[in-house]
Image (cartoon, rainbow, N blue to C red):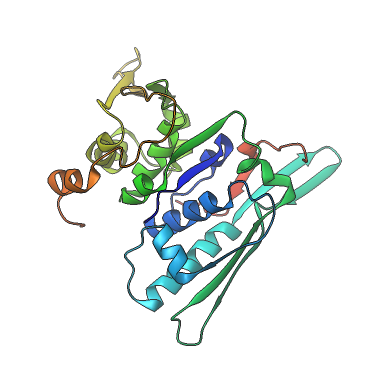
Amino acid sequence: MAKEVVKHHNDLNTIPMRKWTREEMDFFFAIIAKLRNKGTEKIVFNKYQLKELANSSIKHNKRFADSIEGLITNVSKIHYVEKTSNRFRLMNLFSDFDATWTDDLSDMKLIVRVTDNFDYIINKLDSEFTTYELKEFTQIRSTYAKTVYRLLKQWKTIGKKEFNIDEFKRLLDTPDYYGPSEIDKNILAPVKRELPAFFKNLKIKKVKGNTRGTPVTGYIFTWKPEKTGNWVEEKYDVDGWFEKQIGEPSDIDPVPMVNWLADNNSN
């Protein structure tokens, strides 16, 4: 797969993605990578271009079609709602997200175009943006670890990010019942297993309150800050690292995306 860089506004990191599969997330951010600097023009992919771009190992046509259908379903559920005393406005990120298939599912044409309102998400990025290598992202298996990866890449040159527990749960879109033990098992464990390949000296510290029982009130992530500059080809030799660590696979004014809603709030 040719090296591709994903670059998008930080607001995109606030979209809830708990119910997305690994493949759907890979396809989505592969598409985001290709939309960069294209304005609002239509971009067309075929099946093989998208599979290569997303480093996809899906071999069966039906499974690939199901993944694209799931991706489009998830994209269709993401809305921005602007509500004032005299206005209620609903907006979407994409004006086109259209997949057509051959009868035997052997090939596909996907047409994608971002809306004028949210052109700023992937274009005209002078500040407040996140960048990372698509190849790195697609090699991460846990969907929670994928989200933490993007959040930490937002602060990659700082080498430190602290989240209070409510903010962390909101950004990871966890079920309401998740407490520290569920976060340890389902989020932090795969993060510790997968992300040290991309964040050198990654450490996670729990912040605890002074009240009875010393509850966990947040998390501090630290790592060796990345230097700014040009991307380095094959910056991380992740192929051998994964095998060793985890074995085989088991110009409209911008609108802040903090008000993005996804119809996936059930626990």
